[in-house]
Length: 448
Image 1: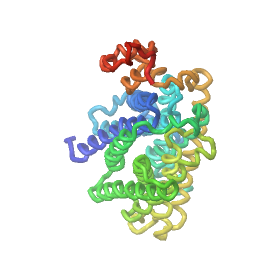
Image 2 (image 1 turned 30 degrees about the vertical axis):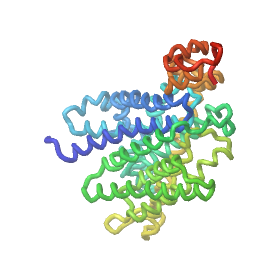
Image 3 (image 1 turned 180 degrees about the vertical axis):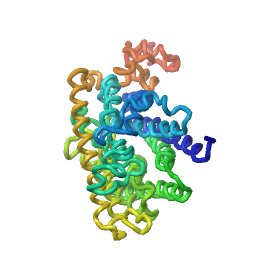
Image 4 (image 1 turned 60 degrees about the vertical axis):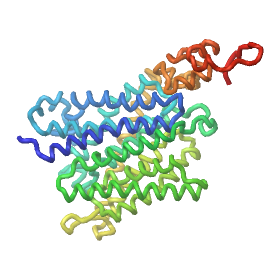
């Protein structure tokens, strides 16, 4: 088969969607403390490495073909993707891998500052295998909630074009459970150092996510008309969500912030994900306005309930994912004059189908994540020690820091992350060594 424009676009979309995971690393890295920034970025990168291998070996096979009770596909049917060599379906397999990668990477934001990297490296492939792959198969791959599936016959056809349930609700639910399993950071809601340390990183990460999301949502478009609708909706929903988030932030806290703008954009992107090809641009504006305002309120609830969702994964991804998925029951466009949401006279059928998908996703992701998290906690330990958390997981887990010079000036560590006497740390940097001495030739014992 000759290479077509559709194949080329799918490869470009896959590259854009893959770029979203490093963008997420920057977004999360900026939101956490300086001494945990590299660890957050590494959690995104290791997700890409692990899931990429899993996807080729058995992950893709579990999301397609003949399945077990409509829950997951045969993991050996396309093991190693050998059977797809010479077929354009290999491009689809690569594109679908990027969805699995970012889905599990999203969860990492809920356990920032305190998780063992080794525990996370075990969690990623197990969670993708036991949670993501079954959900992708059930909704997209011919399973229970796909066209012709057993649940579809009862509840109706679910609409989840780019992953409101499969990606956003599953990761948001897992983040909620894992945050409870790992527990609060020391000083949660009290320590001012838990504030974001690098807002430009956050803005850059959000910009990369927004760019990549056009490929994420639009990669599966089959016609120019559908692609145009997806592109416009992916533009306008996050734009509206950013505006409503900033408005609510101004009313509630007195100031619109850069962090709020970035978070609003992400909330709008999450909300439009399941419905990008199935609602009008005007409806996308309304959806974005609702998602941005609601998620701005949701993220503050973690303090009321004592949930240390460090980087607002639950408030944004679970919150906006639920809004976007259920909203289709009201604003889904009719197809050939039939069906559609309540606002188009389609009745309750679509809302019932969306609600069923939400319940299955929350139940599967929540229960399995709890089992995985507790097992890892028991046999490996998910959390670093108090001392390691205080020193920073960049040092304790990776023996490096994002800002070596900042540590040198503080007189705590040399560029390799090893503790040194204050004077030795100064000598390690000629710029520090050349600084003026106090009168009389006295030497300072440490830096402030």
